Image (cartoon, rainbow, N blue to C red; front, side, top):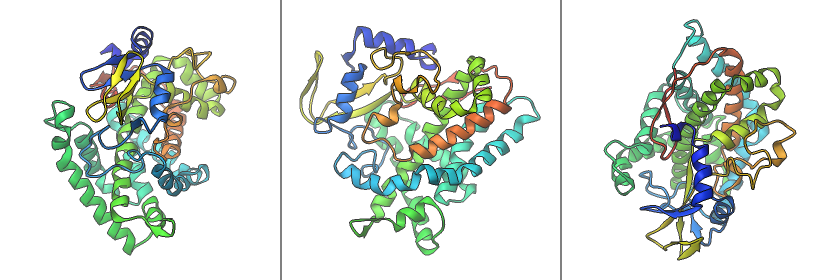
Length: 372
C-alpha cells in the first residue's frame, strides 16, 4: 500500500522507464509533454462520456463537454465562483471548520477522515447550492454509490452498478430545481437557474448534468484532497509549523499540496482516431488514452521538484491539475477556498498528529478510509 500512500517514486520510475505503455483498457501516459498534448488536442482526445462512466445518462457539464461547446458553460459557471464571491462565503466555511474541530477537540483525538474530511465538503456543498443540511448522509451515500459502486468488478460493469444511484441523484436535483424555481434564494443553484446562454436559460437537462458533476467534484475529490494534505502535514511537522508561522504562504501551499499530494492519479481521454504516442497506438472508439501520473515531481517542469512551496518558488513550479486541462471544473476556486480555510484553521488547532492511515484502492482516487 506504500505506492498508494506515497506514489511519487512510482510516478518517477514510470516516467523514466516507460513513459508510454499499453494497459489492458488504455494507453497510459506519464510524461508531461505527452499529457499536455492529450489534454489540449481535443480533436484527437475527447473527454466525452466514454472516458469515465459514473452511471450518468448524458455528458456531465462541463467536464465531459469538449471545446468549443465547453466555453459557453464556463462563461455561466465561472462568475459564480469568482474570488470575490468565494471571499463572501469564506467566513461561513471558517466557522464550520471550527465547529467541526470543537466536536472532538476535548477528546484530544479524532478520526480525521470520518469526523472532518468527509462531512466538511458535503456541508459546504449543501450550503452553496441551498440544499437541506439534513440531506448530508444521503449525499455521502450517493457519491460513494457512483464512484465506488457496490458489486462493480471493473470498468465494463460500472454503468450498471452505479445507474440506480445515478437515477436517484437526477430525481433529487429535479425536485430541488422545482423548489428553487418556485422559491429563488441567494445560492448557486438559483443563480444557475437564472443564467442565460445567448438569451436562453439552461434547459432542465443541462441543470441536472451540472448538478450531478457538482456532487461528485464537490464531495469526493475535496475529501480525498484533505486526507492527503493532512497526512502530509502530519508526516512533515516542520511544514505545518511553517503554515502557522507564515499564514501568508497558505494560498501557495494549497496549490503546492494539490500538485504534490493530489489524490487523482489520472485523467481519462478517448482517442477519436488512431493516434501514435511514443511506441504505443491509441485506437479510435475502443481505446482510450489515460493521462496518468500528473506533472508532480517532474524535473522538466519544476526546477525545485521536491521542495515545499514559498512565494519565491511558486512561479517555477508546475501548476496543479486545474490549469492543465480545458475541461477542469469551474468550481476550483470554491474548493480552493475550502482547502485554505481547512488548512489554516486545522493546522493551527490540531497540534499533534500521529496518523496511521488506512488507504483504499487508488482508482479513481487515492482514498484514506481511516486517519486516526
